[in-house]
Image (cartoon, rainbow, N blue to C red):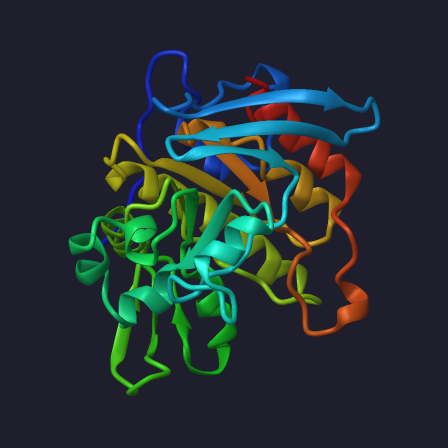
Length: 280
C-alpha cells in the first residue's frame, strides 16, 4: 500500500516539503508550530543565550521540569524499584515500552486496567516509546521498508509487524500522556546514505502517525533523526511542524556501536529545534 503525504492547507506548510529537504525553506522561527492539546502546557523558565534552557512541561497527570531524567519502566515497572520509592526519587514521569508491552501482557490488558499509569499503580505522568529502538536493536533479524518493519518476537519467535499505524494504535490503547512517533533509528557510525534514508523515512512516518492519532487527551511527540552530520541535523527539524506534532525530540547522535563516537548533540540542530518547539 502506498502512503502519500498529507495535503495540508491554510497556514500549514504543505507536506510535500518532505521530498524537498534539499531546497530552501522558511526560517524555523517562522514555521507553524503544533498546537498544545488540552491539559498540556510548556513554559520556558530560564533560557541561556547559548541555547540551554529550563522549562516546565505540564501533562494531565502532573508537571515536570525539563531537562529531566525519565525512569524506564519497560514492562510497566522500573526494575528493583516499587512505585512508592520511585515517587520518592522525585521522578514525575515514567516511560513504558510499546514493543514489550504489546508482546506481553498486551495493550488490551493494560487498557482494561485503566491505562498504563493505573496498570502500574503510578499517579504521575507517563510516556510510551514507539518501538523504534527495538527495531534498531533487532537489526540482525529485522526487515525495514518505507511501509514499516517486520521481525520475530524475542519471546517465542512469532512474526511481528510494526508500522506507524500499528505503533499509534498500540500507544493509544496503552493510554500514556505522551506518545512518540515511530522512527527509523540509526546506529552510528553509519554511511551518509543510510542516515539520509532514516531521516526521510522518519519524517514520512511522523506524518502517518499524525494521520491516525486521534486520542484527544494524549500528546504526540515527533523525533528528529539526522545522525551526527550538520547538514542532516539542521534540515530535519524544519519540516516537522508541517505534521502539526505537539513537540519534537532530537535523537541524531544518541545511539552507536562505538561509545566514543556517541558525543553530545550538535549545538546548531538543537537551536533549530528550540526555535520550532513551543515556548508556551
